[in-house]
Image (cartoon, rainbow over all chains, first blue to last red; front, side):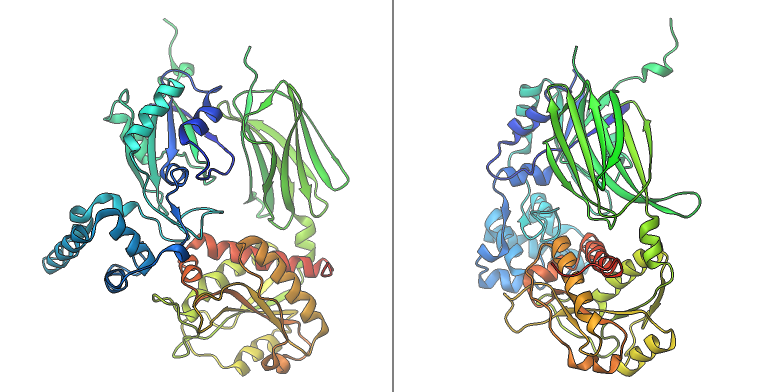
Length: 218
Length: 299
């Protein structure tokens, strides 16, 4: 069970940072064995240079055409975001995704685009998806999240997860290190990874285990 | 022995059981440490001994009308100082709660702001409506819709501060300028704040502007202060302030037209999808009006 959540404020992470160094610097003196370090996916992506200013993206004809079809409030409704999705996954996969989405719609099913074109495209945040100073950027999903969590584990000795918390406070766990029991803990985390506080920090240390104060002395 | 570490500092506005609003500053630490707290020169200072900063030292921006910034300094190997930079006088209460993290909480009352607003009647005018959609974004947003959540967030902030608020429209209806003016006249408004977005044929043009009624000299001051605070919150380009002839008929009521962002800009249309940005825009406008009522002048 989750015993405590410690939100960790960091400096503003940019592409000049190595995410493992950042996590180690701000959690190294605090974490204990058994802790889980929860890292926001957008911060991992930003450190990997995956925050893109829309002005720097040249949207081609296909992107301009395809961006008319997804939900307008979704993340692929601008030519620039769609162009980045095409660059991420390849033209053919995008077209197969579009075909699947079209067939899916005929039978009233949603989500086929991402199932075929790749779930990582669902991690693209269009502008205003992230906090200042990256609110004017499109943020792609992080690369190699599994390698990142294992590297964080090696550097800190604690377990690590990368999570995506969306506007509605739903949570996706993108990757978790090898020592985490994927069952109950991930469920706990997915229910409420950052606690009830609306102050989001890039890192939260999650302390697990039985609550000592409630344990009867033997 | 390991010293406790300060892991986070933040602030937000809360309401107590009496319905009074206050600014809460929270300093989070991995353990308890000795503190002393005092006020001097418009600042509230907490000094801590037997503790180190885990988070970066320096400032945390707040701008909630009462507090501008929080500063964390490491003043000795095991001593820290947190400075709350108060824009206005405020008494505080202090408490320590929790175990992990331990929260050192400074609650600051906002009666200074209440005194500025409590006898004021403010008209909020969400621009356009009905068949008059206003500006259009490159993807799909239209001005008449996006101004509404901002107007409602702003209404909430003015009401929290104790003002009486009148909206010129609450639904998607066409309202003439005369009808809007009539709302201000009939309620004897002290201020008229119209919410719009800018539109430009060039989708690269972006930014914030606040235009004002040429009839009331106070309108220019209000416009300038609102623009400054809005730019500070949204961190967008400053497109300036200019006289708006259409507002001549507003008479002596200080009246402004806030162009929150430029909807025809690709990026700024995207910003308008975010409830966080609506809230920030409302906070910026609120802060500018607060500065105006506090008698500030453009610097």
